[in-house]
Image (cartoon, rainbow over all chains, first blue to last red; front, side, top):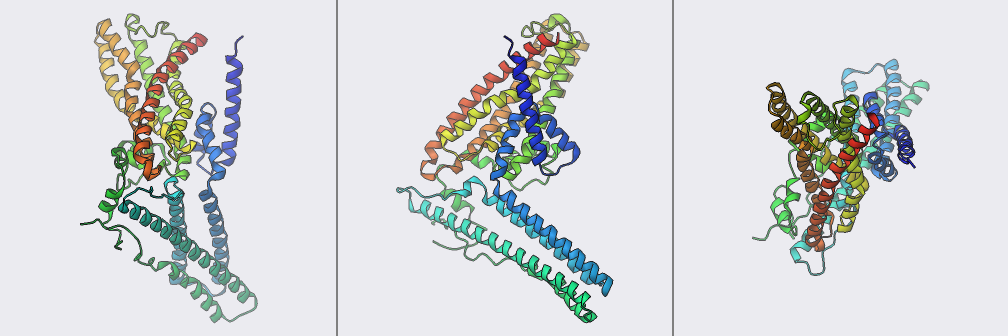
Length: 222
Length: 265
């Protein structure tokens, strides 16, 4: 009995299924890149299967997607507020530049958060390394310092996220106040005040992070 | 415990790490090379200039998803190009010079297509067959690893082989084509063609080294108190896997070639 033909057919059918799943779940790529992926996924699906299986547990990707969505929403709201201000009082070049800098600062902060998430999601940082009962004190101290540094990094990441979310929330509030002011016939001075407040939001990001005085490490014994 | 900045801590930390391994140190290449890792050419550049950077990326779950298709495409393209050149040389050579391993070679289009397909498909299929083994070996040694990461390591090895093969191909082509043009004797021509058939396996040693170095760098996920002993175990298992893989690949290519040739005749 020749089993090669039916086996090959089954293999290619599985490959077709995986190619479809990959197409539906893949993040957007250029059409050429996507085509190459799909073409190679049909015959070489065993290499693509781990990508599909790993996707649901990828916490950092999901978190970043939420952040990207939030950023997109706030940018749209800021666009609308800018249009309202433009039609109402006109936006001076300096303020326009500062709002542009604010948008860039958001993107930079989001990128920094992604970098930190990627780093902290690595398997070597996922679990706590504990020293063996018989380990020499220096090894113990090093491992303890390492844990403290990782904990500090997690705190820095949380702080960065909190700062970004606070800035986004503040700009959303200001945007809604601009619309309200516009349609309650508030004076132009009020609009200028709100515009200045939006442009000033960028300063919350320009301050450098606190100097890491408490970063721990073991000094080599002389 | 003293508190200082991070600027001059490297020596102290390195000294405190138990059982340092040369493979681990080798992967820590700095600074990062700025290339577009999502493009195939960018990846080829990285494989040549900073393989350690790819090793670092293979540990990053979000980059693994991007790396797998690109590495696979690099490997497939290179093998396809090489096997096409090899087939053209075999067709140009006198029939008496064709190596004995290609016993059914008659220069027909079916034979040529079979051999041209056998290399890329066989190489990838052998990797796919050996993939679960290296994953279980990794788990057996106790390293923290995912199937996605193992796939990335194996494909990185394939791509490293492919890049070296691309580098060797023009030299091989120039030499063999010269022999064809100047009517070298059949015995010398046969040796040259046999070398051509074996060239991907010779280049494969570079790919195996790449997998070995990358896989051993995972030893830092082992608990410190067992790292030294487990690293030795991991090293032996990786070598054992490399031996199995080296045996499976030529058999796979040969079988595939025979089978395809019989069907495409």
